[in-house]
Image (cartoon, rainbow over all chains, first blue to last red; front, side):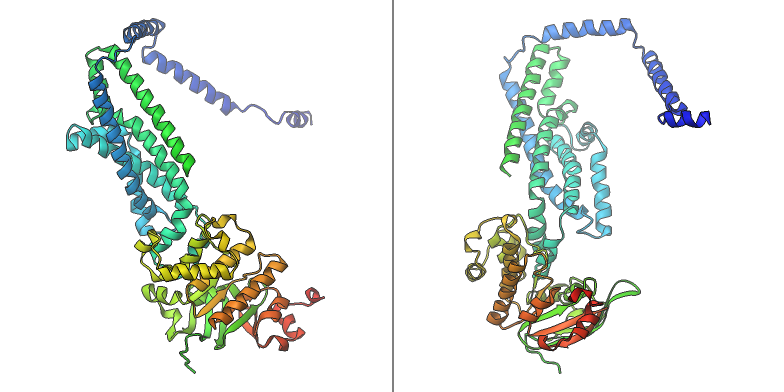
Length: 261
Length: 256
């Protein structure tokens, strides 16, 4: 009797399993810290190094303008070319992956392909393309096209799967061909969302185009990497500030695009 | 029989089932040779919509034949089906407009069956199509809305666009699936007037599903009463008896 009353008064009794789980998690974190050798001395040593790095980074050195400008130009070109082709290819692949438009026999392999595009981080894809097609901008462009497909094609397919079928039915009833139905009844319903995805992707391609150079796939990343290797930390700071400026401008542009549509 | 005049449709022993063993249409026979409104009445779920969608093959009937324009519609596929669909206009209960396109684009979409996708993409319409679209907009009283997006219109206005789109096809037959059910009584009457106008103007039959018996009696030349997937009554509106309505809708309490 007494036990039952107690149970009723405390419906949120802490469970033993729950507590054990916390103990295990905390124990594992302590174990990991000690096995990675993260002692207090090591951490203090690290902070001392960063202080030296920071002091050598400032003031940033913008004197090698031509190197900076050519790096920026290449990164921009990589981002824009790869966004253009990535978005156009995604338009078709996304349509082929939409399960309300296409039979399973088409959507299944296309979805597998999209999943493949998504499964690797751009750095890994970039390394593969550098090995496959050689150093330079081509590898960077191919990398970002693959990354764009993995992102936009998937979201675009999902957007198509959410459309209302009423207009599709009506346009079909006029005797319109399959492609006319797509153009007239499907595209208008997903167009604004597609513009949104595309401008996000341009944004992220801009960011990633500065990164693929680190593994030799062209652009500002390459300049950054060699500046690091030559310990030109003031030039590194200049490059990092430039990247920040590019990203901010890119974000502004994509905001404007999204507002228009 | 076998009349091949363009505004004739002959439905023979039509069956349809969405789920095997649960038929919705159980042997429908309808023969229409005259222009004007033919109203199909009956309770929800009795297969009125299914019947209309079998005619333009948005649904595939499981058995029977539909003779129209010299062809059996139930046998058509692909290109041949699309060609014949151009001559069957359809008006929907929920209007089914493309919301983000303009009123004019929605009306012009009635011509899509006659043009290539490339021309559709570029909105490259023939001059005579544009002229006809503006004429139709004028007839349905929406000229000043031509360049507005369809999602800004009221229900009655949307249905007018839906009718203009269907007429734009140059149909030999109009199908209308509950065209007034989402509208207020006054607008419903206006839409029925409009359906009648186009039936006369184009000299075509309009096969129209409707709940409202009084509205049906007022505008239809002929009433088809459906009950349990079959035709129970087929004849002039003045001859339909209370006993018939009792069979069609079941019970009588609703009539008081």
